[in-house]
Length: 372
Image 1 (cartoon, rainbow, N blue to C red):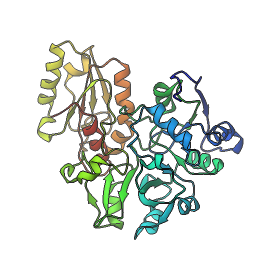
Image 2 (image 1 turned 90 degrees about the vertical axis):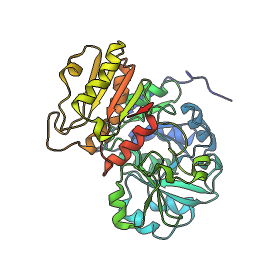
Image 3 (image 1 turned 180 degrees about the vertical axis):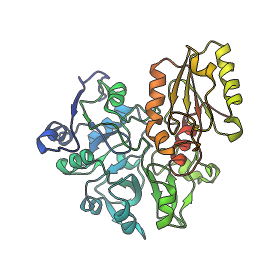
């Protein structure tokens, strides 16, 4: 039976990752063990978790998020013993890869064991697994005593949450508890790879850079939709995705989102031209400025109907074109902030595809209403 949208008075508890005490986790652990769901922090974004040993909890995740049932979830673990329980076999190179990058923002596909309910994997034979590096997340999973299935703790399609406040905004009344463990350090979801394909495939760029993975897996291919190799994604992955982020539109603000991708469009004159189009229509414009080599024109900065978020390397002209770590960390929060200010149109200056830029541009392409 469906739960009403206001079934809960959603509570938030703060836990300092530097001062972890088992007693602080008692409310969350009791809820998880009873088949409920909990919002919790990770180093990437906040997750909405339920124990995989309680399939009814997994159903509540889909319901709270309004998430399509064919969109599989990532299972989070606290140690390698949990991995042994989840998988039938390790792909070649998987142990070396996981030992190097776990705990951290890497998700790997494995052949699933019978312990993993089909509702978690959307009926697929594979399960996506990661071990978060956030101490609060790992402690929660450890004390709960079972792996936790968790997508991002937002309404499906909306920008991912990087603070407990974002989770509360989207899911208040829909879930009983949110753990506030501070702001997510990375700001974009985990990187997802499939080692069973030949050559191995990066399915979703994220918090672990492609360049770092290539050092260990030189043959790793980029085939993620929304990246530069967008047309290479195998058709079966579009129709029956093995991991989140492959099929549906994601990360979108309420406003009409314009992504400036082409370098030739990232000039002061061109930015002014775009702004003037919507200024003349008396639209409220949100602007995310990323280029450290371009001074944002004064008419844009001074307009009362325009809200500017400055994500340039030093908040001023700089020798670097952009700071990909900064943009990744602040992207989703910036989109939410501009939505909250009533922006009808949001313009984002795109960045290069190197390092964190690959994940940033992937998210923006999926969110965009228009790409220039």
